[in-house]
Image 1 (cartoon, rainbow, N blue to C red):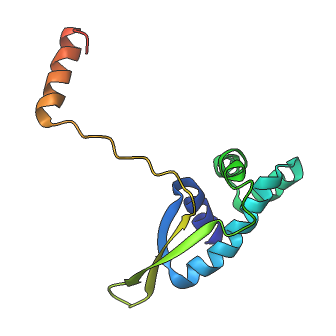
Image 2 (tube, rainbow, N blue to C red; image 1 turned 45 degrees about the vertical axis):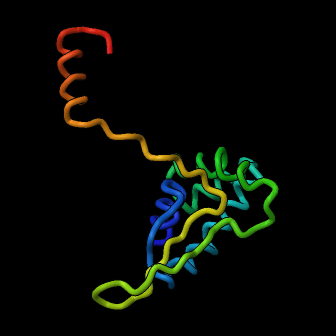
Image 3 (cartoon, rainbow, N blue to C red; image 1 turned 180 degrees about the horizontal axis):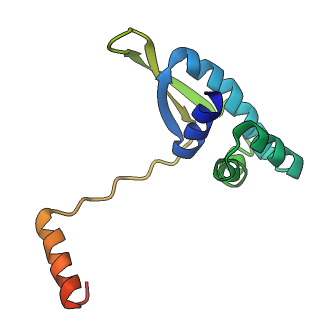
Length: 126
């Protein structure tokens, strides 16, 4: 379970889970980011043995490691969201500190979608 949570956190850079899981996940992922800062081949193999996904390991060593190069620790933030409906477990959001948030792309209206479809069919430039 910890492997899957860690992989999801590295891929999406923010996930929502219970408080108990987030506390354990923070310890696990911060050690992996520290390995990513070092960048040696042995560290990459060790990280892969923990996670088992090449894409996640690649992101740790190429994106997250250099991002937190000068930071001595504390790469994750845990924010409480409130109790879960059903069993009352405390939900939290766990995310990377200093993560880059991309603004959402404006969605096309139905009319714009139809016009683009017709232009494509007719071979007219977009």
